[in-house]
Amino acid sequence: MGRPATTFTSDEWRAIAAAAASANETAPHHANKEFLDQFIAAVARATGQLYGQTLYERMLSAVGIRRRPSGLTWSKAIRRAREAGLPEPRSRNVREAGEPIAPPPAASHGPLPVDERSDEMMDLRLRVEVSEMALRDAYARLARYEAECTTVGMRATSAEAQVRELTQQLERERAEHDQRTADLMQRLDALTGAVQCVAGLENHMRMQTDNLRQQMSEQCRYWKGRAEALDKALADERIKADAMRRALGNRIPQSA
Image 1 (cartoon, helix red, strand yellow):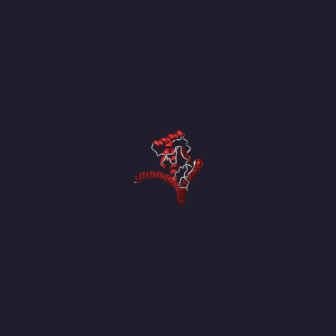
Image 2 (cartoon, rainbow, N blue to C red):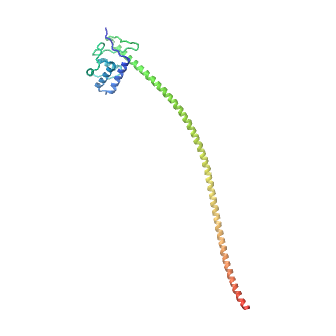
């Protein structure tokens, strides 16, 4: 008659897988002592039991951990766990050398009896159970991912609407800016024309001023010459008048 198989619940399997992964990540690859201490203690906390080397190795194989400590390292680690007061192995279905591990299928609620010749079948069932658990976790992660994708899609739709609104606002502002620029260019053209007109008028006034200045200068010279000529004529007339006066003055006494 075969020995009863060791079985674990789904929660225990999750805890065992998490314990193995955590110990594998925490302990360096060459530090198997620390790795085994953490792994055995975590399994004991999850299941309330201590097991043998073979069963622990099957657990590691089932969860994909590639570490293979030596038998001496295993023995010392299990002994340290016992000395630390961790739970003792279940004598009714586990021996020191370790038992085949056979987690129940999803539809089964009791232990699966096997004999010593069914190790490969138990390993296969163990891997199937772990694969089913991994598949359920993957579906859960996929559901979370789909929910996140839906949320991201909604955010993307909202962002696209905001982008469209901002684009329209930008187009309106750009049109207003173009209109203001066109108005400013028209005003600038008008101001440029006015400046050119003022510059032309200034040149015309400058030429007129120069002509007027030249005419005034010529007239000034003309009238200055006339004044000088008149002064000279006046002086000549005065001389003549004085001469005539003297001549007349000399004639009057002789006639008297």
